[in-house]
Length: 88
Image 1 (cartoon, rainbow, N blue to C red):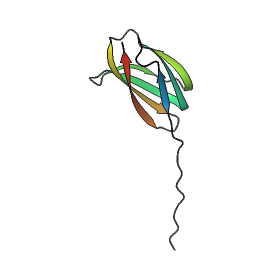
Image 2: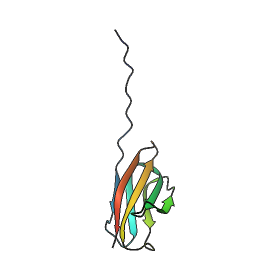
Image 3: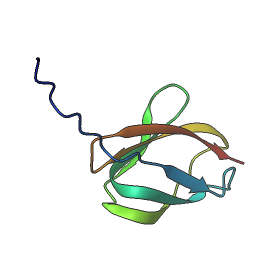
């Protein structure tokens, strides 16, 4: 018989952003601690970054122009999630 190693799974991370769309003030709530986040415009340019190290926090990007942005979050398990942000 062949010895099969145990598979270990990392917890599934979810990130909720609200309100979205917003005027630029977003609340972010996660099931695992967010260690880094960045916001990019539709050209892929980074326009905001933070290292909140928290499950619940707020970002204020109201100085940015109205439009669609991409939020990338990385949690304590190095899982990266991407979401769309809309500033109205």
